[in-house]
Image (cartoon, helix red, strand yellow):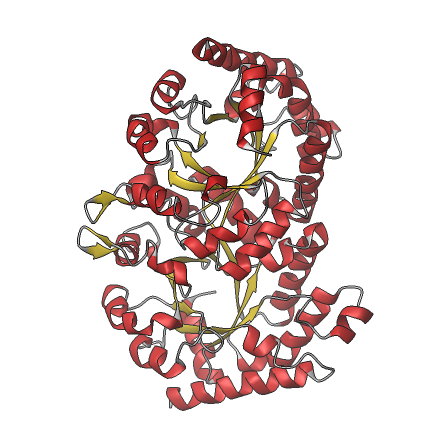
Length: 271
Length: 271
């Protein structure tokens, strides 16, 4: 999927919402866990079926599937295929945080872009250029580099000065020189919205995937104010706030309501 | 597995060899690919059955399994279980390069330490402390942090100065203060052997996982000279040099010969 298509979807849906799927059997409605033979799939499918019109992207967190072994991984494949075939307009992200030497990264690219129909995958930049470029050889596919993450540990290395410049800025700058850099996007946590002004100076045109609004305390308004560009350039993720809005029989309606509230806020900002 | 057990195995086997399993259908013996219903499993099983007595560790590269979708992931599980049940004395590493916010890293820990019987997993340090510590809450399990990798892209960030100190040294230093840091190990590429003297000043007691000997040009002698500590503290990995020593009917014997040559070199260094 091209970034132009994402931009058009944002205009059409008046939304830059990314739905995050982090299914957790302990937090899911107990009636569904008890009655379903495939609770991970059924839960995620139901949520996506209810809120797809309110979001432009879906981000699947692979860890929450891998934790359940082969069954979980099989569900991951099935879910990715379900979403892509029923909602091809949704920008489908594998939140997988992969990245290795070139030879190995190429295998991960095959896993997520060929064996599965993802449009993008999140990547840790620590191993540099040749660990990322294999993902960018796929036309209209994207690597979303970790830049400044929303967690506490972001302070350990990302915000440390390197040659008088913090590491995450070096990641932004340097990666812009890599092959097919126009297919790069970046993860920037909403909890670090004050950095967005500086980030936009370095990557004015790139899309940013922004977790951390809601549960983690980031402000949607601040993210939009400092992070939006001419093509909006933001995919703001919400996972737990939508998925676990209720754990009763009304979980899907509650998810719809939560997603709707976010989309309304986004619509107001877009106008 | 404790590092004391690894040390005892090193003494017993006169080897600090880690066998890397990166099975590639295009490089595997064509007769096996043509005749086997499970070529990835059969190939890896045959290699392990032939060389297990010469190595103290096996490192499975998850990407080479994920690239083949659900079938590949199922094989990954089956292979890990096969190795752990038949050769419990081998230190079993998932070369998976995971790492995410704490909540998600905990799922990856479940995937590799509960759903699968790995003793250790490789982790990218970019997201800092809370992305790594969940792996260290498992007793006698290990997180192997990327420090200085063997690829070209290592120069992009790892070797850049931060507050007058290169990033990989910050990773070594800082991580030593994390909870259960004694369960940390580090990836240091053999192609960067000249850095080992400095590395040993920062992490004198930690085990180092060292890829890059052989195909990538690193010297076993230099790695041992600069990297060995009182308990040896090295797991030197060889993948392609053993796996693809021959792609004919004699592939297992050729693998044995290649592993044997490496073990003999190690024995000489250990004496």
